[in-house]
Length: 133
Image (cartoon, rainbow, N blue to C red; front, side, top):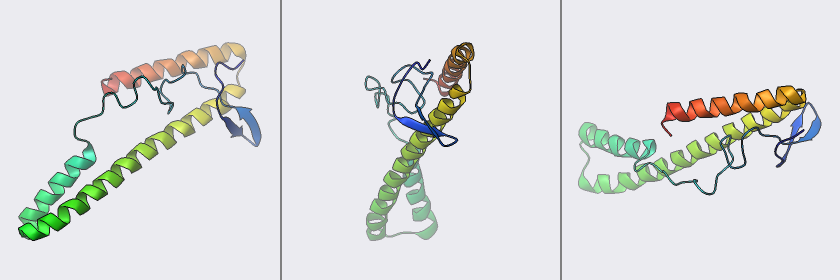
């Protein structure tokens, strides 16, 4: 018995309905519209990288103000690209894990699936605790 249906996944050449132990909108790459983006950090890693890199260039290369004004937008643009790459990677990882869960669940009995759901929920709670969410 599947607890949730969404898009399809392929397991060893078989097309199966995607199954997720998490509640709709919860973790494993499924966006929750009520909380998505609600707690975005003020300054992300890539923005800090952009600022510190420019400072390093200014110190090490003795950049002129004109050079700084040309280089700053390049670093900011790269920072934005890196942020998008991080978001895409996170989504791809969650999609791969959900797909794996689909394949694992097809091999389980109903009782094992219930335990699988509990196990995944435990892992989600542990990850949230570690990340401070």
